[in-house]
Image 1: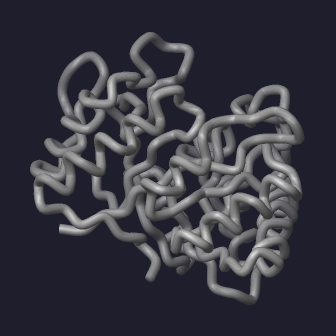
Image 2: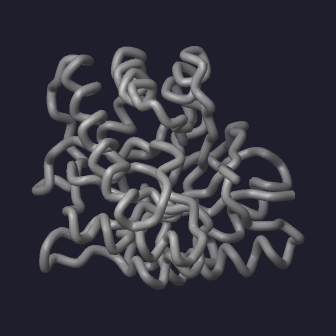
Image 3: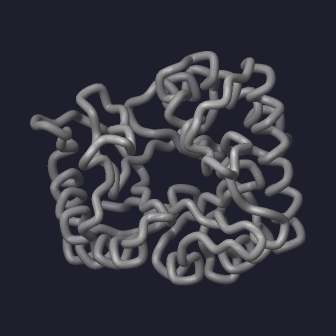
Length: 252
């Protein structure tokens, strides 16, 4: 069995540091890099891209609402056309910077509130797909498993890969539990690793409050801004490797 391990990185801005990118890049196989919307700036993008390229880590664009104060976790009312142009501009920024850093952007993963809205809204999902399709180079979509974003991407003819979250709780409909809810974020690395091992054996993910749901995934996400991110990613690598699972990028 083979699966990818990804993290949201490059989310610092100027002198403000978020996460432990260098350590995470030694553990993950794919890096979703912020591209100036919810976080990130030219220097942070370049440095993260360069480090990823040097380590052989696959790179994707991580566009979100242009809301640094809210870290892209608040919905900003926008028309589908506005969403398309916003996402296109952010992807373009990272693609251009990748050329300088000797890296190649291979996929797009929406961030935060934009991703959560797209998970249940076909118009927003379609707007993101329009942005991805606007580029001459082929870009895959990394979508949350079991969501409308995943289904709309496939219907639009995009190459779609699906992810599950190591450190987030799930609702019965496959949506992530809102961060404002107790238990929404898993902070225990061993608990996160054990849950993933069980998922890979059964294909079912526990639901907050009881029960489980069937999901499919080619990638596992560890949020880089989680204080336990490095320990969680290391524990996941250890646990999955012990089960004979190979960790490798979903994009060759």
